[in-house]
Image 1: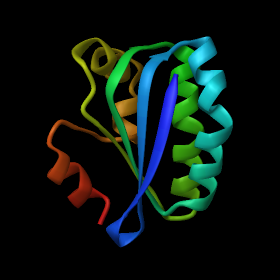
Image 2 (image 1 turned 120 degrees about the vertical axis):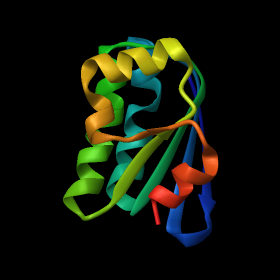
Image 3 (image 1 turned 45 degrees about the horizontal axis):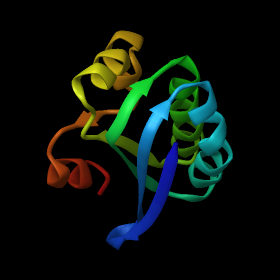
Image 4 (image 1 turned 180 degrees about the vertical axis):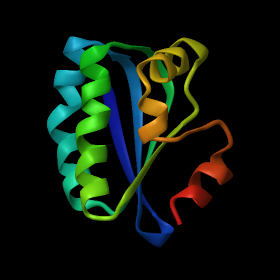
Length: 111
């Protein structure tokens, strides 16, 4: 699992994930995601290149989102493939972390 981080205008942190968010993938990025969740005010998680997400991957998204929300911050998910979006929807994560397919709309939701 690859992770890249970009700081965007307006205090938005863009997190780009690449690979499989299974047990090993989640373990590889868990610490960094928690640091981002604990220090950012708005996070856009780009999952266009994520091919699979399991329960540990869901946890890797939920924990930093809760940290953000507790401080009044926001997190959105951008660009999931159909399989990944199905897991996010079936698990109910989309009610906590909104999913967007349009980049500009995802950014606007964070401002």
